[in-house]
Length: 463
Picture 1 (cartoon, rainbow, N blue to C red):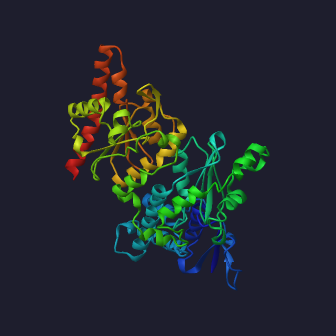
Picture 2: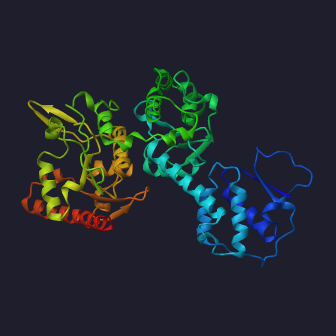
């Protein structure tokens, strides 16, 4: 018997190296016990470590299908303690039957595929449900979120959040491992124990002890200390967590899986957004202007923010820019009734000039604060294509400042598998003083929308 001790629960490279060594030495799966560093019991009589095996001849080798490696990468993140043995058993059998994975009635294949599927769903759940809340203020702000994964997915999913929120420092707190992004690199710290799970009386204490960025620990300025001491700075995080989980933070991930996320209900989501106080814009705006359109829309159009007309009416794109958008969509061949239309920022930002309210461009903190609504709309609608109209919309869609000129007019792959298209905002066309330039830019805008029309038609045929 051989005992293989891996460095961690997600040590794929260690498992792969050990599995290859064992297979080349013709060690049967029944003769191997797998464990993880720090969790393995002391060696029992008859067990030995794998490194005692004799050296492998350089010409000795074998191959497995590429899809097995992909399957193993996911399945090894499952929480089932038998996953290492299962994957080695599959590897052992693949040496003799290279097409084994095509036999979907095989119990080992079914079990491994089910594990991989469960991990994939949990990773998608993390992408959909993680909501960052601001801690601290302005330049000293950090963003934190709480999540309870079902499997060992935090290190697997963390790069997704680094790409999406590249321009803000964040931490994702979980019982397994905590991920942190400082704008340059991802780092990981130990997870919090069940006894330290965020609760109203100890959220701030937990953050201070474990999850502040290193700079916060080292900064001794009075202003920084004052920021950390003002009230319960993580109460908004708890409020979101309680909302996601039906009023309590459950220690059992499977309990969360059974509940239908609120993001599936657009009506409830719209009502929730009506009471949003995440940034100061709500104080002067007439109302929240939420997105509108069919639940099964294949295309989501994202603008900047509601204008004066939209703020008063409570509906997106009903003013002059909306009228130009409707005309361009019709010329491009996009069925307006089958499109979901929204804005990156849901409140009207303006400067009063007598009786006139002059539009003001949203600032980055306001875009960040409102991004949760955009993400939850995407989760509810599940569009194939997201059209970002203008720089503010592009910043919301991509999670970072994105130049229009370099990205305009072509389909871009998003991390979640959707497509994005960047173009100008119709209000830009209205502001152009040169009539000839306005005609030219309008035609370019229509050409951009024709790309969306083509995708809408393909989706209709597929359906």
